[in-house]
Amino acid sequence: MSNKTNTTLPDEAVCLTAHSLQWRGSLKHVAPEEIPPSESLLSGEALEGYLNALGEPPLSLIAVGDIMLGGRGKEALAEHGPDYAFEAVLPILRRASIVLGNLEGPFARKAPREPRDHSYRVNPELATSLRRAGINVVTLANNHLLDCGRAGVLETLETLTLADIAALGAGANQEAAHAPVIRQAGRWRIGLLGYFWNRRCAATMDLPGSAMNRRAALEADIRALREQVDRVVVSFHWGFSYNREPSPKQRAKAHFAVDCGADAVVGHHPHIAQPFEIYRGCPIFYSVGNFAFGSGNSRAEGLLVGLRFENTRTIVDVYPLYVKNRDPRVHYQPKVLTREPSERTLRNLAAISGPSGELLKVERGRGRLDLPWTPREGING
Image (cartoon, rainbow, N blue to C red; front, side, top):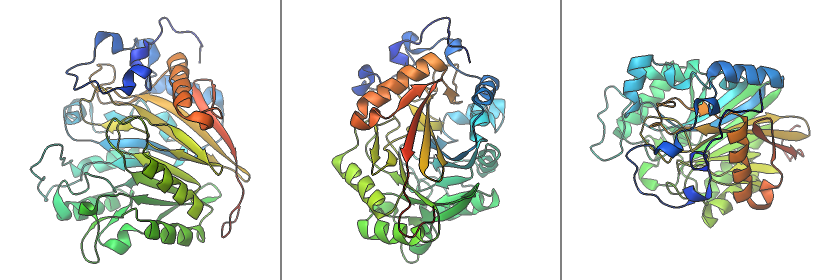
């Protein structure tokens, strides 16, 4: 990839700027100064060439942000086809054995949508577009799980099963909601768990819903999973929309998950990227923001985080995504930034991440963490 761009991306258009730290109110459109030049966004073909030039081994797992294929994004999918939302990032998604996303909006045809603001109901036929893009694991443990009621949970689970996509953090009952997803990534057996905090969405002994992030359950689930796999990844849905900083409770919960045996933690919900942290050698991404989300949100940000597990280390690659859907060059199709704006965004991410940010090496249009890994009790490294 060339280091040169014809014009620079304005700071306002880059994720994680000081300007974006403050609440700006609702925006009816993307301001002209926030629209990056075409040269700052990678097409799928350009991304393929960039990744080929890197010439690196496949990733074990990729984590992306919020996915919702309904809302205003339906028109774009109707116009361009069901796979449109993922076309510009397909080359990187297909370089991982496991791709984890946060699915917001039930796949439901029979169950009606709840009559409240910001509730969604997504065409079940679109589930196969996720799978074709390589997204093979989704967490359902989020505030949109009950957008179509408890019946919608069951319909979503059935739809995902038919599409060969594993569901995390939700199930037909409490036991199923807390069950891990276990997948193979090369020689590594990876276990995944997902959690939400709101009791309204909780699964019970006989009702579908989400897994709750209570400490006792976390400890029991993670310690049991450690005995079955080589690495454990935990997903949390938490925090507040557009809050830049994770709360002390979130940090404590993430640390507790690592103390129990998690090797990586990924968070969702704020719709923007939050700081990352390295705790006991394990990466914690408190929020990876949005991914393919069918709203006209002009403040949304996104990160694509790739993990490659090796014998004695964990390699983490971070790519900023441009996901402002009201920009006509995005229009409900997330794009990877080119080198200069990407590296500027990553330096801002490092700056807000404190001492952990000093470990992020920014080069070649991406951020990289090279973290030593030591086997833990019950895990074969």
